[in-house]
Length: 360
Image (tube, rainbow, N blue to C red):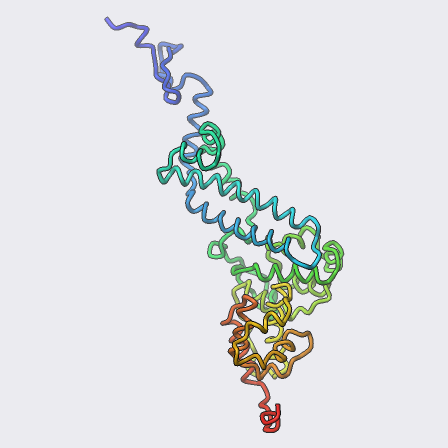
């Protein structure tokens, strides 16, 4: 005859400890306590919402790289910057690194690494790792990141869903799609504010913007509309034409040149594109840029200086493509975009006279 006591014993599906059921009738319990029931529920929830840690590691890695560039940039500029900016970027970088370590631990486990191996790399104990980087904890961290409003440098450009913009939002009255690289635009806006010598708060007041929003789009965390960029540039005593090409590039669009555009218009667009790249790199000394020219084109150094100057450079129409390309690459610009500006300029540039060709 079977022992009634052994018949009343049940194995907990969470802790695997056998316990005696309190009520001998009815449905057999699965868990020995409410704590085990809650723990099992958390595990099931984590399994049903398990994050793709490999993909998250790639995404957060891009955020880490962007933040690291911002830290290096804010700490190395010769122009005085907002005192707390390097600290703010450093704190944000620390948070991104913590998230990256968390998903990297889970990814390593998924690929066959042992807790002991990870403990040796991280200088932590196995129990600390299992507590801090459990599937539940890391999944919660990933969900928290997804729940936050996405910062533009963090989200890969290909994954940003295009959002319709109001008509007339762009410099040429176009409605741009919301994608593309935005680092250059953010750097240019940040440098422009520093070169203006005005505090961020003063510029924000003049432009009719909130200081917090200015901090965000100059750090690349938000993407401003063209109207916002124009107001900001004017408040910094800058030329909005210098930012048009950067803004268009950040939105993945081209600024179309009218077929009947004259030389002055095309020249202004070419110079604006080059000055925008120059500004995005904190306006390095032209002599440094000229040193990057091919040997046979050093005689064009005076033209390059005039192109980067604020006044119109009529002689820019005679600038060779080799020198223009070298300048664009030295400024980390898109050679294809600059080539289109250069081609349009060459098409309408006045031809030098015979005397000019003979005597310069």
